[in-house]
Length: 199
Image 1 (cartoon, one colour):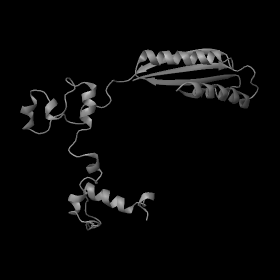
Image 2 (tube, one colour; image 1 turned 30 degrees about the vertical axis):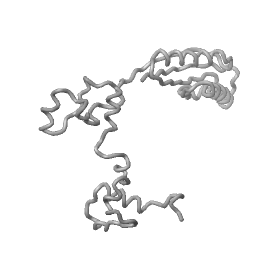
Image 3 (cartoon, one colour; image 1 turned 45 degrees about the vertical axis):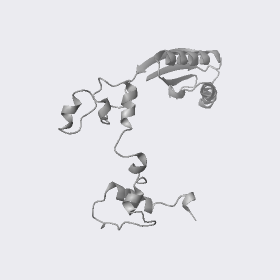
Image 4 (tube, one colour; image 1 turned 90 degrees about the horizontal axis):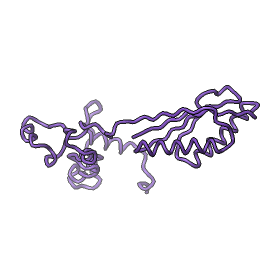
């Protein structure tokens, strides 16, 4: 992921007040936001009438694309002829190419290395980042022992309540620790009913 940040200093010679300066800046920022997918904000010189500093930020996957996009935006601001551009600064920052750390989830047995069988006797193993492509790493994050419905307490409803409709478990005493499923069931019973649940 790449982030390109630019700082543009604009001169506003016809401005006689901060209100007039804000009108010009609003015109510039609104046009830039309408044309490009970019974040724009006034960052400095907020008390000066005839000078404004604005910052722009663009995020993307390729550094070349982000740089080209920022150059287009700066050229657009220059060609607007609303406020002359005095100076410009641009900086590109690269962030790591890993979306998540490799310790989030263990790999399934099919994608582990040859030495993984020896480590299974000792307990769970951590995923090794050397043999993983980014796609395999992301796919391994979603593999768990329970499905999403079971994690939310919906998938094993029949098993928990022995198939009885409307059956509820007795609540544990107030000071007793609860399991995760009991806490979720208690939270569901305390919340306001949704529109589709009302009769």
